[in-house]
Amino acid sequence: MVASFDLDTQLSQRIVAEYREMAGLRLTATQAARLLALDVDRCRTMLDVLVSEGSLARGANGQYCAIADHVWVRRRPATTRPRTPPRPHRSVAMRITVRATSSWLTRIAKRRFEFALGRFSSRVHSVTVRVADINGPRGGVDKRCRVTVQLQSPKRAIIVEDLDPDAAVAIDRVADRAARTVARLVDTATNWRTMNNGRQEVRG
Image (cartoon, rainbow, N blue to C red):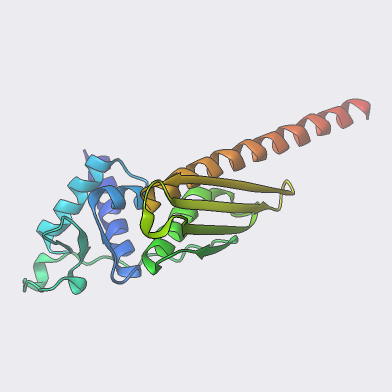
C-alpha cells in the first residue's frame, strides 16, 4: 500500500509539473494519457483527483488545465493545496526539432518524442518531426506526422511517418514505431559488437 501511495504521489507531481511547464495547456483525459504515456482510465482518475484537490481545473468541454489558465480561480485555503517540489532538470543530449501547424501540437510532439526516445539520448544525434495537414479544409485522413531520427551509434537515419484524422494520434503512433525501430537497431549493434569481441578473445 505504501509503494502504491508513493507511485500515485509521484504521478500527481509529474502531471502538475507538465501543466506548469506548458502554460496554456488544455487536454482531454485521452490526450493527456498519450502525452504522459499512461493508461487512459488511470490518467483520468489522477486528473480528477487533482481537480478535487484544486491543483487543476476541468472545463465544461472536458479539457483539463492549470488553475491559472481557467476562466475562474476558486479560492481555497493555502493548507489544502499540496506543494509540488520543483521538477528536477532532465538533460536530453539529443536535439528535437518540431515543425507543426500549431504551438500546441509542437509542445505535444516534443514531449512525446522526449518520452519515447529519452532512454536512447546518448545514441540519438537529432530528431526532426514534421506535422502537416495535407488536405487542408477538405478534411479526411490528412494529418501526417513524419519523423527523421539521426543515430550516432550505429550511424543510421530512420524515417517513420503515419496518417490519421487526429494529429495527436499520428504523433503517438510515429513515436512508438520510431522507439521500437531505434531499440531494435541498438540491440543489433550491441549484439554484433559483443559477438566480435568474443571472436577476438578466442583468437588471442
